[in-house]
Every structure is written in C-alpha cells, then in structure tokens.
Amino acid sequence: MKRYIIIFIISFFYMNQPIQAQVKITHIAVYVSDLKESANFYRDVLKFKEIDEPFKDGLHAWFDIGNNVQLHIIEAEWQPITINKINHLCFSIPVMEDFIANLESHKVAFEDWPGEQGKITIRPDGIQQIYLKDPDGYWIEINDEY
Image (cartoon, helix red, strand yellow):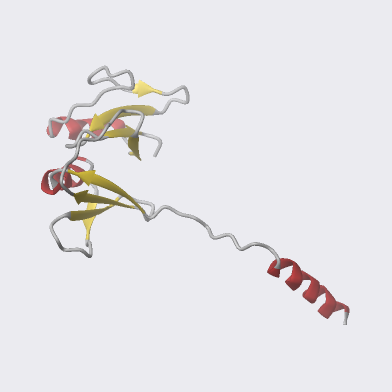
C-alpha cells in the first residue's frame, strides 16, 4: 500500500509540472538576390553540402551546415537592407590555414574584426577569427573553435 501511495504522490507531482519543450535550431534562412551566385558561394567556397529542398521553384537552395542544422537561401525581389559586421553568421572550421587557402583559390577577400584585409583576429582565448562577405554582403565569421 505504501508503494502505491508513493507512486501516486510522484505521479501527481509530475502531472502538475509545466511541460517544457526542448527548443532547438533547425535552420537559418538567408534572403539573397541571386540564388545561383549565392548557392555557388555556400557550396564551393564554404564547402556546405547542398541537400534536397521541397519547393523545386528555382528560388530556394538548402545546405547541410552540420549539427543537424540547415542553411536555407531564398531568392526574392531584392530590397535594400542594412548589413553590418555585428550581424553575422559564424561557422567553425578545423584548420584556419586550409580554409584561407581555399578562400584565396576562389579570390574571396577576408579581414580581421577591425577591418584589416588579409589579417586574422586572435581572441583572448587563442581562437582565430576571420570575417568575409557572401555575394549579397552578409558578414560571415569563420573561426577555428572546431
């Protein structure tokens, strides 16, 4: 009988607790002016794997960016937007030198946080960071906190 009372009390306690769903990120959507140019950049320069997308309308491209997260790029009629370096996407890579060599082979410029071309920022914890822009001018941080 004691056992049933304990089970009842435990059940009652858990039934009266609010249920909290685990929130997780599934994708990031980025508005682009030219789908083909942006898809080439994210596939060829950042080396993201292009994945199937359900729309099949020539206005969407989806990429696997790791950790079960996707990048969705969506072409729409371009309207001017405000872009600055503080608003950025960040991706981590294992070896900065290899990534920079890839950027150079695609003639993609990069800079450190203050804006000096071809330079790398070293955070106080030793992590290296560089910043570059995608074809629409969105800032992207690349770091080696892999």
